[in-house]
Length: 229
Ligand code: 5RP
Image (cartoon, rainbow, N blue to C red; front, top):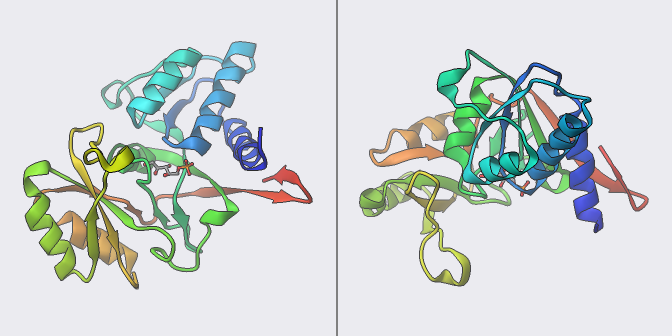
C-alpha cells in the first residue's frame, strides 16, 4: 500500500473505532470512507462490534457494505443516525466543506446532516483557508434543467461546466439519474448564503456546500514517512 493509501487507512481506522455496538451508522462515499467502511466490516467480522446498521449514501457504499456483511437500512427504518463517516474535497477552518467529488453529495448531505455526530475523514491536502480555492463546487441538476441552471449559476458569478465521465464519452450521471455541473467561484465569502441561493434555483437538487454539518474532522498526514491522524 502506498503512503497516500496508508494515510487514508489510518484515518479510516480511527473513524471506525468511534463506532459502538448497536449504533446506526451513516456510510459515506469516496476512497477515504471506503477505508472506514472496511474497518467497520473487519470489526464486525471479528466480533468486536455487534448489531450495527448502516445507512448508505451511494451505490458504492451499498455494494461495499454488502460485500462486508454490514446490514443496511433505509431512512424509513430508523429513528436516528448515531454517527456518520464521510470524506470531503475541501475543509475550511469553520469545518465547512465542499463535497461531491464522487457526485454523491445529495444523499451524503441528507444522511450526514441527520447524524448526531458527523465525522469527516480527509488527508491534510484537503484543508483550505477558503472554500473554493482548490476544488470546483459540484451542483446536481435535473437533465432537463441543465441550460437554465447553467445560466443562473453564471449570473451568481460562477463559471459552470458540465462534468464529463471517463474519456469524455458522456456526462457523469448520479445515483438519482441526474447530471453534475462543477462551478468555479473565484471567491465564496459567505458559504451559507451561496448554498441557499444555489439550492433555490429551480432544477437544482443539491449542491456540495456543507455548512455547519461537520462535528469532527479527522485529518490524515504522513510524518517522517509514517501515516498519522
Ligand atoms: C463523494 C464525496 C467524497 O467524500 C469526496 O469526494 C472525498 O473523496 P475521497 O476520500 O476519495 O478523496 O464527496 O461525493
